[in-house]
Length: 390
Image (cartoon, rainbow, N blue to C red):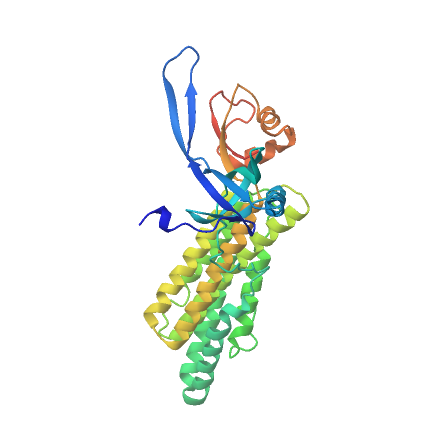
């Protein structure tokens, strides 16, 4: 079996033609670096050049001109088109050049030499695009655990009033301890049998702490708040009630999510008003990593419980991790990518900003990306700094 038995009817953009010759040339894309007056060269293989295809079409008969004109019209259309190669089959190509040839000794006969350049195949979409949520409601995180805790307290109210009193006392004292970790004023719980109310209130109070308009860097302020929220793990350590521990675990997750949402909202607002961005892409990646770590820890603990409620809560945590990833990735990709730059001469950070961006005011941006920079007024030649790509 060979090409003679597998030939296909040649056509371009649906216009068929007889093909008498076909050739394809292949070339490598090589990057050659060579110093003047030197026989040595540094060669780097950059891949393959696109296939160069040559076909010879032939038209005969009294009405050959009709078919010739149809193919020439198809060849003159702008953009890539579908070529059915007589040997290689269907492919996308661009027309490079074509020429017709007439001979006085051959009446009603014409050949057309065509050169094509093969185009890459369109990639099929494998995944459905996911829409990034504008904000995540923390109420959905604690809804199921809080309802379960409420049902547990109602059950104690009917069956064991002494245990109810002890449980209520534990909840009140633990919430006071959590508020002391956050530096919040003590608030009385009007209805301890409605966990959703005071849990949502606590998370809202955490959200109010997340402000980045102080002299402290935004990432430092974020670390301070998340460290205080992390101390929630010390609360309810002595209780043997799975309902309380699951509800409190979801409260801690909700608090971390609320802090992350405030970070995202702050960066979005700064981008919209063209202000200096408080969080660099590296900072945002740290926020994302920390939040995902908290979610993963919660998922691991829920898996140990292996109950119907745990399976449902795990799914909520997984969706949260995905949405947080998408939200922060969207912000990171909005900014130019991070790269490094070498200081070309001894200079100041203002001179370097002008050298890199032709904008001296972006020196503050360089300082935020390089918090360990000791003396911005004396940058040494050869120093490597983290900067935004131009």
